[in-house]
Image (tube, rainbow, N blue to C red; front, side, top):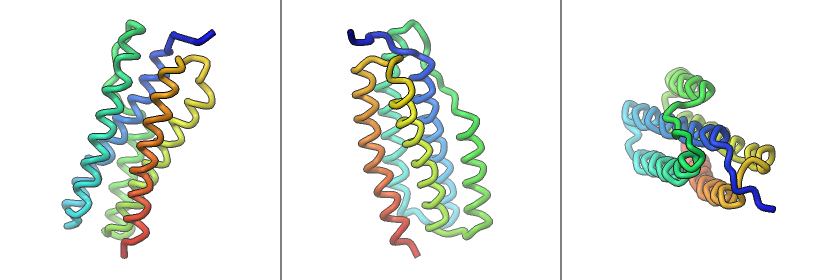
Length: 154
Protein backbone atom coordinates (compact mmCIF):
# COMPACT_ATOMS: atom_id res chain seq x y z
CA UNK A 1 0.00 0.00 0.00
CA UNK A 2 1.40 3.37 -0.99
CA UNK A 3 1.93 5.99 1.65
CA UNK A 4 -0.14 9.02 0.65
CA UNK A 5 0.72 11.06 3.72
CA UNK A 6 3.74 13.30 3.77
CA UNK A 7 5.44 14.35 6.95
CA UNK A 8 5.40 18.17 6.69
CA UNK A 9 8.41 18.49 9.04
CA UNK A 10 10.56 16.48 6.65
CA UNK A 11 9.43 18.53 3.66
CA UNK A 12 9.96 21.77 5.60
CA UNK A 13 13.54 20.64 6.32
CA UNK A 14 14.04 20.35 2.55
CA UNK A 15 12.54 23.80 2.10
CA UNK A 16 15.02 25.06 4.72
CA UNK A 17 18.00 23.63 2.83
CA UNK A 18 16.69 25.38 -0.30
CA UNK A 19 16.35 28.61 1.70
CA UNK A 20 19.97 28.06 2.81
CA UNK A 21 21.03 27.58 -0.79
CA UNK A 22 19.25 30.79 -1.84
CA UNK A 23 20.82 32.78 0.99
CA UNK A 24 24.22 31.23 0.26
CA UNK A 25 24.08 32.22 -3.39
CA UNK A 26 22.92 35.72 -2.47
CA UNK A 27 26.03 35.94 -0.28
CA UNK A 28 28.11 34.56 -3.15
CA UNK A 29 26.63 37.18 -5.50
CA UNK A 30 27.64 39.95 -3.08
CA UNK A 31 31.12 38.49 -2.64
CA UNK A 32 31.57 38.00 -6.40
CA UNK A 33 30.55 41.61 -7.02
CA UNK A 34 32.99 42.84 -4.37
CA UNK A 35 35.77 40.78 -5.92
CA UNK A 36 34.96 41.93 -9.46
CA UNK A 37 33.85 38.43 -10.48
CA UNK A 38 30.63 39.44 -12.17
CA UNK A 39 31.02 36.64 -14.73
CA UNK A 40 29.73 34.27 -12.03
CA UNK A 41 26.56 36.29 -11.53
CA UNK A 42 24.42 34.41 -14.09
CA UNK A 43 25.30 30.98 -12.66
CA UNK A 44 24.63 32.05 -9.07
CA UNK A 45 21.33 33.71 -10.04
CA UNK A 46 20.23 30.55 -11.87
CA UNK A 47 20.91 28.47 -8.77
CA UNK A 48 18.81 30.87 -6.70
CA UNK A 49 15.96 30.54 -9.21
CA UNK A 50 16.32 26.77 -9.17
CA UNK A 51 15.89 26.59 -5.38
CA UNK A 52 12.96 29.01 -5.53
CA UNK A 53 11.33 26.65 -8.02
CA UNK A 54 12.09 23.65 -5.79
CA UNK A 55 10.38 25.41 -2.87
CA UNK A 56 7.37 26.18 -5.07
CA UNK A 57 7.17 22.48 -5.96
CA UNK A 58 7.43 21.31 -2.32
CA UNK A 59 5.08 23.85 -0.76
CA UNK A 60 1.79 22.20 -1.83
CA UNK A 61 2.77 18.99 -0.04
CA UNK A 62 3.18 20.87 3.25
CA UNK A 63 -0.11 22.72 2.75
CA UNK A 64 -1.98 19.46 2.01
CA UNK A 65 -1.01 18.22 5.47
CA UNK A 66 -2.51 21.35 7.06
CA UNK A 67 0.84 22.96 7.87
CA UNK A 68 2.55 26.11 6.65
CA UNK A 69 5.78 26.04 4.65
CA UNK A 70 8.74 27.47 6.49
CA UNK A 71 10.65 30.54 5.46
CA UNK A 72 13.49 29.72 7.86
CA UNK A 73 16.97 28.43 7.18
CA UNK A 74 18.88 25.77 9.07
CA UNK A 75 21.40 26.91 11.67
CA UNK A 76 24.07 24.99 9.76
CA UNK A 77 23.27 27.09 6.67
CA UNK A 78 23.74 30.31 8.60
CA UNK A 79 27.08 29.06 9.88
CA UNK A 80 28.07 27.97 6.37
CA UNK A 81 27.35 31.41 4.90
CA UNK A 82 29.38 33.07 7.65
CA UNK A 83 32.24 30.63 7.03
CA UNK A 84 32.03 31.28 3.27
CA UNK A 85 32.48 35.02 3.79
CA UNK A 86 35.43 34.49 6.11
CA UNK A 87 37.09 31.89 3.87
CA UNK A 88 36.85 34.00 0.73
CA UNK A 89 38.03 37.13 2.49
CA UNK A 90 40.97 35.43 4.23
CA UNK A 91 41.94 32.49 2.06
CA UNK A 92 42.27 34.05 -1.29
CA UNK A 93 39.86 36.76 -2.28
CA UNK A 94 39.59 34.96 -5.58
CA UNK A 95 37.31 33.11 -7.97
CA UNK A 96 38.50 29.64 -6.97
CA UNK A 97 37.98 30.22 -3.22
CA UNK A 98 34.45 31.46 -3.82
CA UNK A 99 33.59 28.54 -6.09
CA UNK A 100 35.05 26.05 -3.58
CA UNK A 101 32.74 27.53 -0.94
CA UNK A 102 29.74 27.26 -3.28
CA UNK A 103 30.61 23.64 -4.01
CA UNK A 104 30.62 22.85 -0.29
CA UNK A 105 27.11 24.29 -0.11
CA UNK A 106 26.06 22.13 -3.06
CA UNK A 107 27.53 19.09 -1.29
CA UNK A 108 25.48 19.86 1.85
CA UNK A 109 22.33 20.23 -0.26
CA UNK A 110 22.95 16.90 -2.00
CA UNK A 111 23.65 15.09 1.27
CA UNK A 112 20.45 16.44 2.86
CA UNK A 113 18.34 15.21 -0.04
CA UNK A 114 20.09 11.81 -0.16
CA UNK A 115 19.71 11.33 3.59
CA UNK A 116 16.01 12.17 3.36
CA UNK A 117 15.52 9.70 0.52
CA UNK A 118 17.35 7.00 2.50
CA UNK A 119 16.02 7.59 6.02
CA UNK A 120 12.57 9.12 5.60
CA UNK A 121 11.12 7.32 2.60
CA UNK A 122 8.42 5.70 4.80
CA UNK A 123 7.15 9.15 5.77
CA UNK A 124 6.80 10.49 2.22
CA UNK A 125 4.56 9.54 -0.67
CA UNK A 126 5.95 8.03 -3.84
CA UNK A 127 4.99 11.28 -5.57
CA UNK A 128 7.16 13.34 -3.20
CA UNK A 129 10.05 10.87 -3.41
CA UNK A 130 9.96 11.10 -7.20
CA UNK A 131 9.87 14.90 -6.97
CA UNK A 132 12.94 14.82 -4.68
CA UNK A 133 14.81 12.54 -7.06
CA UNK A 134 14.03 14.94 -9.91
CA UNK A 135 15.18 17.95 -7.89
CA UNK A 136 18.34 16.12 -6.85
CA UNK A 137 19.09 15.35 -10.49
CA UNK A 138 18.64 19.00 -11.48
CA UNK A 139 20.79 20.14 -8.55
CA UNK A 140 23.51 17.66 -9.56
CA UNK A 141 23.74 19.39 -12.93
CA UNK A 142 24.17 22.77 -11.19
CA UNK A 143 26.73 21.22 -8.84
CA UNK A 144 28.70 19.84 -11.79
CA UNK A 145 28.70 23.27 -13.42
CA UNK A 146 30.20 24.79 -10.25
CA UNK A 147 32.89 22.07 -10.21
CA UNK A 148 33.79 22.62 -13.86
CA UNK A 149 34.05 26.39 -13.46
CA UNK A 150 36.05 25.92 -10.23
CA UNK A 151 38.45 23.47 -11.90
CA UNK A 152 39.05 25.99 -14.69
CA UNK A 153 39.61 28.88 -12.27
CA UNK A 154 43.12 30.12 -11.82
